[in-house]
Length: 235
Ligand code: SF4
Image 1 (cartoon, helix red, strand yellow):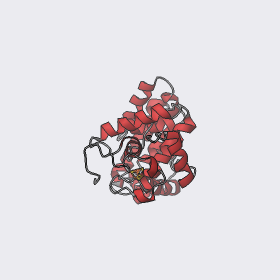
Image 2: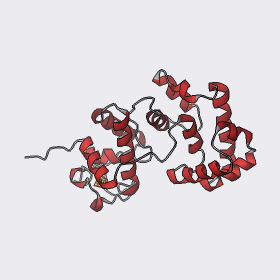
Image 3: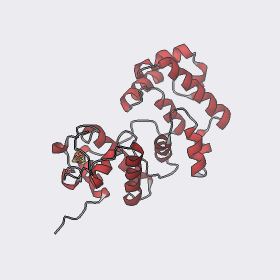
Image 4: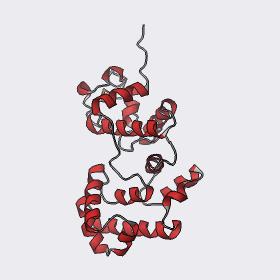
């Protein structure tokens, strides 16, 4: 008799038991998220957090504080976040000015409305694509979307189908469909899924060389069972 497939909610329960409850490590208000995002480059939780903490200390993260600071002072403040601080400083000033001028300083109010319109507004900010827009709308409590961590859509795909596809867009869509189909359309359920899949992708289910022998969900994982969908297990 074939083994019953483990549902995604049960997989998340096992991941939560292993890693503990997860909290977002970034500000969830849309305007502050954008500031945080440009605090690091290449953008990662660690780089953005370093730049953000320094910005808080040296300038402040309020839009008015960013607008008042000189580009040189901003660049020095976000330097701990990584490369091209001068470019990121100009970007911070640009987004602060746009939020102030185009949305009267209230980006959240502009996002509460038709979903397509909200996504369009967010994607007009530099380096925000669909994954970033969905993440902002979900964590801000605006729309309970099936958001997928952009750096690890492969996690849920490996568990359910086996080896992820070579095409990032296809893998991303497969991950989004899995979350949409199995995780209730509620903010707490969808943010929990996002955070646990992200943590697992960072810790064990890495894009290259996943650490399967240590994985708490290996017994339910199609990749671990050898389903590589016509490709080698090696990345
Ligand atoms: S068994 Fe391996 S591929 Fe499957 S979820 Fe765990 S780490 Fe990822």
